[in-house]
Amino acid sequence: DAGVTQSPTHLIKTRGQQVTLRCSPISGHKSVSWYQQVLGQGPQFIFQYYEKEERGRGNFPDRFSARQFPNYSSELNVNALLLGDSALYLCASSLGLTYQETQYFGPGTRLLVL
Amino acid sequence: AQSVTQLGSHVSVSEGALVLLRCNYSSSVPPYLFWYVQYPNQGLQLLLKYTSAATLVKGINGFEAEFKKSETSFHLTKPSAHMSDAAEYFCAVTTNTGNQFYFGTGTSLTVIP
Image (cartoon, rainbow over all chains, first blue to last red; front, side):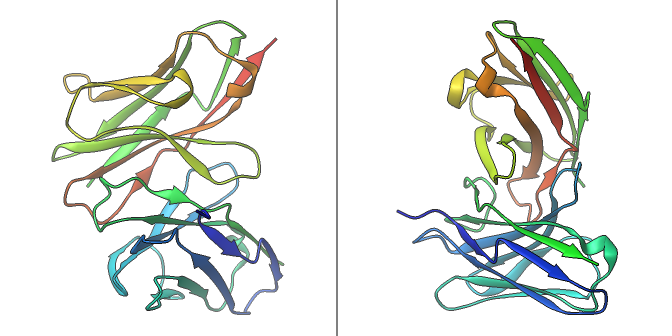
């Protein structure tokens, strides 16, 4: 089976623009979580979606939003980009809602904001 | 709220030596604890997890970790380091009802030949 896939792999945007990142979970996984990893730091939790509903949200501004589709794929949107949004954005999928389930991470989308 | 603290942002060991990466957690309820590894330009891979079963957890690639409630620790060890173990290691915590997942700041492991 294919692992978690993310697109695009790299992205360059300018301040003020909007960006959409995409994630396809492992087949059969219903939960998708998004993380932001700034260079030199650990991943920071942004969102968890399960069965198309937001189930968890980290300490991120409303410029960050996400959704999950009926096929369990997910998009992360970031509006009004700031230089500080430059990071590796990781998507992880798991079978169920709770984090007892193992999360499987994709390779990430590297976003550079100029 | 939960959090983890990883002591030592950089650790260097000689090939064949013991690897010890430290993680202390803070949680008001029983935690679930995880160790992940990240190789350059790759996503994270689960090494092992503690979910309130055995306190000594064995993972992949010869790694293991012991949950010590009295010390609020979950240190990662490997008896003999290999060159291929060089990577970034992250400790993480959540709870059985938690809807958030918290990572530490990471420890970069260098293996010296």
